[in-house]
Image (cartoon, rainbow, N blue to C red; front, side, top):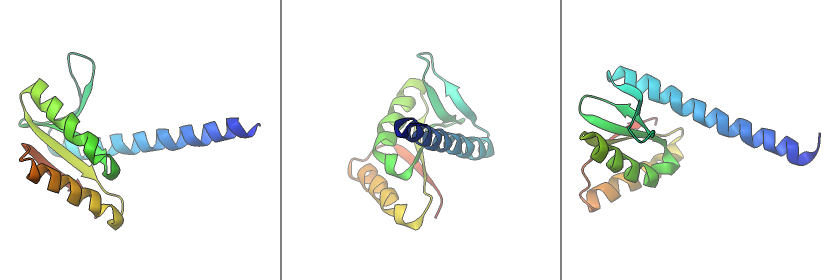
Length: 118
């Protein structure tokens, strides 16, 4: 098998695994909060978790900046409060959590946060 093809399969597998892991976190956390997992919006996009009070974006630690925008957008479209669940897989990712909290506080953003992990 040629090297580029092998590399493609490795990268595809890694991407698929990360997506599968995120959906696992979504299901466990969201169902634990009696929320709807992957709530479909009118435009076809999906809110990771929609609870009685919040439209929640769940992301891995390094994607915290994207989570801010998505949570605010989902909040506007659903009429629910914005929320972010940040998934941390190791202690070294705590810096991402700190930065997320700092930006939210600095700009007084109306976003509730939860942390999964260390």
